[in-house]
Each structure stands twice: as C-alpha cells, then as structure tokens.
Image 1 (cartoon, rainbow, N blue to C red):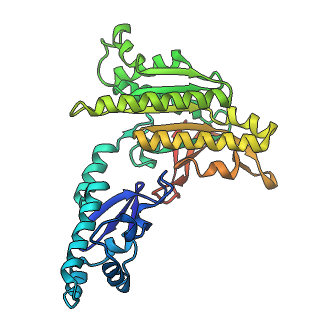
Image 2: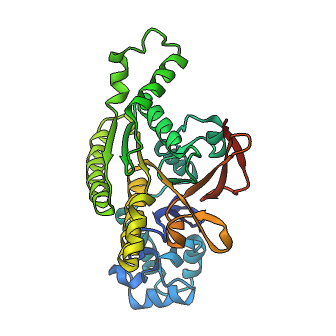
Image 3: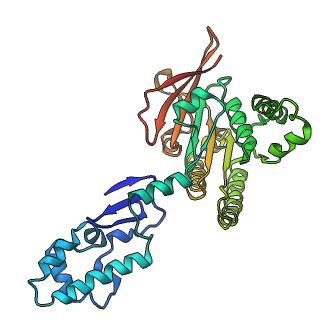
Length: 354
C-alpha cells in the first residue's frame, strides 16, 4: 500500500485499486468497512467466519490478500463453491461502485494527462521547482519587502496568459500593475521573435486571460474564492466534454497575509477559524480542479529575534511548496531557498535576480 498524489493504491497480486486517500474529504473510509456491511447475499455467516479465520475482515484485508491462495485454501471446505462465489461478488461490487481497476501504467498516463506546470518566468526558480508551479498544488512565496514576491507573481501571471491559460489575480494590497503586465507581455512576444506583432491588437488576447480582483478583507476573499470554485468547476466540466482540450488555470493571491493578519490580531479564535477556511478552500481549488495556486506571505519576528513566515504554525500545513526569497543588501543579489516541498528534499538555493 502506498500513497502518491492524493491517491491510495492497494495492490493484490493481480489487481490494483485506486480509492481516495486518507487525506480525502470523505469522512468514512470505504477500505476500512467490514465486508459484512456490503450486504451481499453470498457473504453468509459461514463465509465471513472462514475469511475472518484467514485475516480477512475488512475491504482492505480483502484487497491485499492473495486471492488465488485464499481460493485454493477454500477447496478443503465444504462450502468452497460459496466462498468462490463470495470472492467474485466482492470483486464485482468494488469494480462497479468505486474507481475502476487500473495498473501502474494507467496511473502514470493519468498523471501525465492531468499534471501541468506554470513557469515563473525565472529559469533558476523553475529549475528549483523541477519545472515550475505544479497543478494541484499551493505554492507560497515568503520574504521581506523588496525581495521580488510581487514581481514573480506578475511574471507567472503574464507567462500563463501568454501561453493561453486563464489567470485570476487577487490583489489585496494594491500591488497589481496592468502597465507592468503589458511590459512583460511585450517582452514575451519579442523574445518569441514576434518583433512586429507586439501591437495592441495582439496583446489584447493574453490580457483578456487575466482577471484582476481587488479584495481588502478576509470575508471578501472567502466569498470570491467560493465564487471562483463554482465557476471553475463548471468551466472544467465544459472543457472535459471537448476531446483534446486542456484547461490551464492559475490563481494568484498577493498577498494572503495582508487580509488574514488583521483578524488574527483582533480576535484570535475567530481569526484562526477564518484562516483555516481560506487554507481549506485554496487546497480544494488546487486539488479538485488541477490548477496552480500562487500566494505571497510576509515575514515576522519570532523568538530570539529570528525572522519567520507570518500566520503561524497552523498555516504552515497549507502550502505544498514554500519558497523563501531574500535579498543581500550589500550586492543587491536575490536568493530563492526551498524550505518546504511535498515531494522533494529542501536543500537547494538559487540566485534568481540581480
């Protein structure tokens, strides 16, 4: 049994079954259900007793057991035919009611089809993240002022829109600049060799892919995120009905700490609940809709005068990836350090701007 990308894979010698992992929203874990709860007529008391005597009481036990060996042992029983029928019925029940059976190759193909990367426009950071911002994840940029957080957000948004993706840019501190986005798009067209095509009519196409939302409190942010979730979910269903069409979406929040920190200071209990709600909807947006979420966070002074990301330990579990941006004031060199990643060892550091 192993967990990978939110999917728990259970193997028997001949089958592999994908079901929601332990981190799933579902409260009742189907794999831990007792076999008798299936209500299958062939699962009589005698059959259940035989299975239990061989360590098979739950669906999980059934899936990890060598079924051929179990059937072979049942040959010595009086009701061997009934046991074989029960095994067949359980397999059919699982196949018809849960995610279809698939092998490792099928899982890999599914991963290739659903995972994409959004480039940040900075080669060193993309290299650090093994390709950029991965769909299905929340990436957080933390750092002091003037370390390039907003610049990276706008670069990523411009590049995503340039490549035909949709961007929802949530600005909480009036840092979004349409003029700067226009400059970045000009640069992208020119670097692509379209020196004569960077006119206003060509720039309109990617500009129409960027939607700027200005919110200045956590309640407005939550309302907007729920609206986006409903809209993106319906858009995904429309795109999925068109074969060969991929849906690329990026959500940027610059900055999330600007709207959460005030409520944490005024009412710690309510503020903490609101913060957790924001984190939950962000992770749900990313996972369910296979999109990338990029957020920024500021730094605060902790114990001993050491700097640390704001919003505390409870927020630490929200981002899948956390990048620390810093600037050396002596030589004006900026550094990006990987301090958290859900599937990588965090030992890398890169220069990303001078």
